Image (cartoon, rainbow, N blue to C red; front, side, top):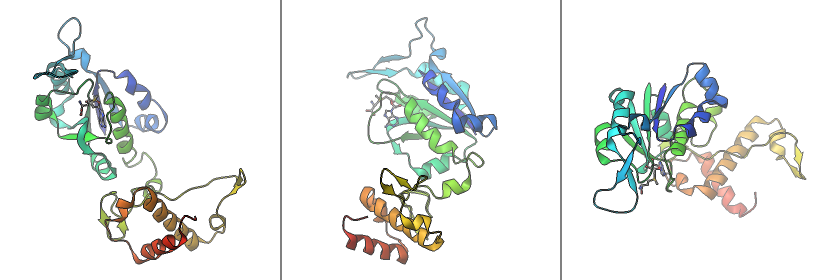
Length: 256
Ligand code: SAM
C-alpha cells in the first residue's frame, strides 16, 4: 500500500514512519509512504496557506489553491482520498479493515478551522473522525488511522495476533453481529512473574487446561465489555455459552 499524507507540518509525521513495526513494514516494501508539505504548493513568497472564513467567524481556513495543487500532484484521482475531520464518520475496526485493502491512500490533515468545502467536493472520498473530540490539527488523527490500517495489511504482523484482539470477533466490527456473536473487548492478559506486588496470575491460566482457559477468557471479555462498552452486547446474537456466562457474571455482583 502507498500512503500519501498532506500536511502543513509533515515533520510531526516522519518519526512515526521511521520506527518499530512501521519501519520494518516500509523496509519490507509492504508499505510505501510520502509526506507532502502543502506549503510547497503555496504561490506567494510568504508561503501563505490560510485565510479568513467567508461569512465571518473566528479562525482561519486552509486555502483551496495550494491544497488542491498538492492533491493533483499526489494523484488524488487514482487513490482513495480521506480528509481527517471531527465531523466525519467515526473510525472503527471495520473501516480500518476496509481501508487496508486499498492499494493507495491519500490523507489530508487539516489545521486551523479546517479546509475549504470545495476541496472536499472535488477530491475527498471519505471524511473520517478518530473520536468525538477536537484536536488542534489532523496529523495525530492521520497517524491513528494509518496505525489502525497498516497493521491489517497481510504480512505486517501475524494473523494470529490480530484474530484475538478487541473488535476482532466474528463480525470484525464493533457495531456488527456475525454468526458467532458480536465483537468483544479483549480479556485481561498476564506475563511473568506469576506473583507481582502480592497479586497472583489467575490459577486457571497456569493450569494448562485449554478448555477452561478459553471459558475464562470469554467470561472476562464479557465482563469487560459489559463494564466499558455495554452497547456492543446490545446488538444481540450472543451464543448460548456467552449468555450463560453473562448470567453468571450478574450473580457475582462486583466480584471478579
Ligand atoms: N472547525 C473544525 C470543527 O469544528 O469540526 C475543527 C478543526 S480542528 C481545530 C483542525 C483540524 O484538526 C481538522 O481540520 C482536522 O483535520 C483535525 N482534527 C481535529 N479533531 C479531529 C478528530 N476528532 N478526528 C479527525 N481529525 C481531527
